[in-house]
Image 1 (cartoon, helix red, strand yellow):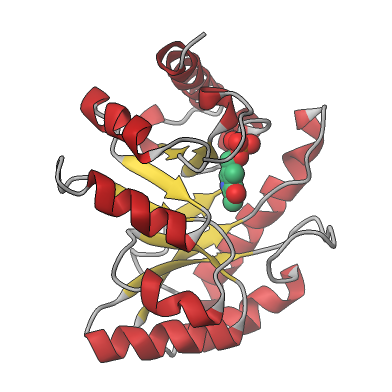
Image 2: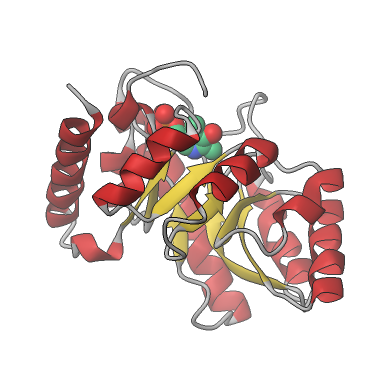
Length: 233
Ligand SMILES: *Cc1c(COP(=O)(O)O)cnc(C)c1O
């Protein structure tokens, strides 16, 4: 199957998972992860009407953004990969949302560059709910104190939480990870009264997005289910 057929399958599964959970499919953003494809291929996606793209490497992201920029200014780019502090200047002002804020020095540098450029940076706090050592993200215990610090930085807009579940052949086993993220999201809402920006739960990838939607995902990040498990391009 080509990507259009795969995309239709994914959209159908998103609708069905939303229906099972009594949710509107419109509440869920399908973030198309374009790290597997070239800028020329992304142009085809734009022509097809897709508008939300995610990249995990900053230089690739910037190159693809430039290649696509002439087509429309309606594209919304998300940065989903781990961000080195010395690459912050490449990220600030160039993304709808940065999903991977996971440490204080990064928060402070994003804030510093944002203030210098007089922009605000919408961010998600990345949480390592499962505790896998190979994964980035804050330990669940650290999330509330970290939020308390981030909230004081005027250049940042904290919009919610992001996690990656461990890869598994049995997606159902990821449910406690997604539920754990949602509970942290709710606790922050109760304890800090963060306001209307606090609304995103970025969770669920090709392998587990249906479970994530049942557990409240507002953004699912999907690459290989659409493009096949190709090499990154
Ligand atoms: C690559 C990537 C995805 C997409 O993964 P697939 O399994 O290909 O859907 C989602 N989130 C992050 C952070 C990624 O790096």
